[in-house]
Image 1 (cartoon, rainbow, N blue to C red):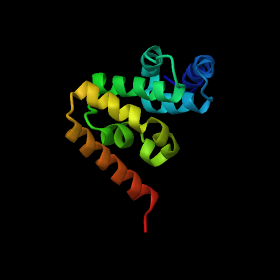
Image 2: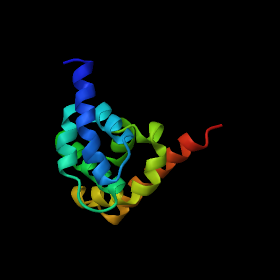
Image 3: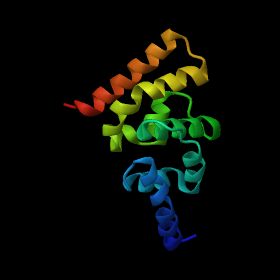
Length: 129
């Protein structure tokens, strides 16, 4: 309803995010992208590399509740990672692509095409002239 509610909600996320082994900036990122739906994402985070497992939970949420159907939808349109959190992509790219392949039942050829599209986009934003 207002900024104070947002601050209160953000504060309520700090402990769970810290317990996962992530820094406080993830609370801002998640609330900025998903609002109160952040709770649904955090409930779906599995044990493992916290950054990878959080990204996979985000992907499952966006596949189930939003119009994400391709890796570029996820990395560009939905999360903004390609432009604002590019440093996260190296660690999560392969697990996210594997999750897409499994969930979307992609062939190896489709997976390779999507991987090339993602790598091309990363290259374009990394090495502009």
